[in-house]
Length: 72
Length: 142
Image (cartoon, rainbow over all chains, first blue to last red; front, side, top):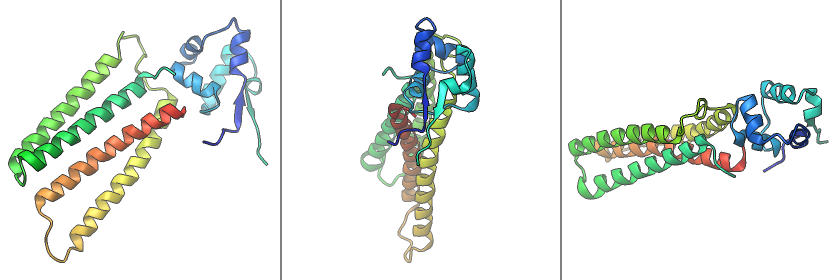
C-alpha cells in the first residue's frame, strides 16, 4: 500500500493538549475512534471539513496539523 | 486494533450472506434438484433470514445504545463506496456474461432454474464480495 502524501501531527498535538485520548478527539469531531486512528497513522486522508474540525479542536492553523508532501 | 461497529456489522453481514449461499446450494443440489416451487420457498426463507440477521446484528452491535454509536462517519461511507464499486463491476460483468450465454446459445440448453441459480449467486455473491472488501479496507485503515 502506497503511503499517502498528507502527513499530520495529531499525535503530538493530542499529547500537548493534556494527553487527549483518541476517543475524546473522536467524540469532539464526530467520528469513530478507528477513524482518528487511521487519520493519525496517515492511512486515511480526512475531508476538508473534518480537517478543519481537528484543527479547531487544537486551536491551531490547518497547516500546523496537516502537511502535504509533494513527491517529485 | 479494536474494530468499529461498522466493521463488525460488515463481518456479520458477510457471514450471514455466506450462510445463505451455502443453505441455498444444499437445498438446490441435494434436497430440491430441478424443482422451482420448493426452491421459491427456500428463497423466501433466505430473504427472511437476511432481514432477521441484519436487523438483529444492527441491534446487538448498537449496544449499549449510546447516541451516535452506530452512525456512519465519512470513512465508513468512503470504504462502503469503494467496496460497492468493486462488487458492482463484478455483478455487471457476471450479468452480462449470463446475458451473452443466453442470447448466443445455439441450443436452448439453459433451463429457467439454472438462470435462477445463476442470478441468486450473482446477487448474493456481489453482496458478499462488497462486505469482504469492506472488511479488507477496514483492516488496512481506509
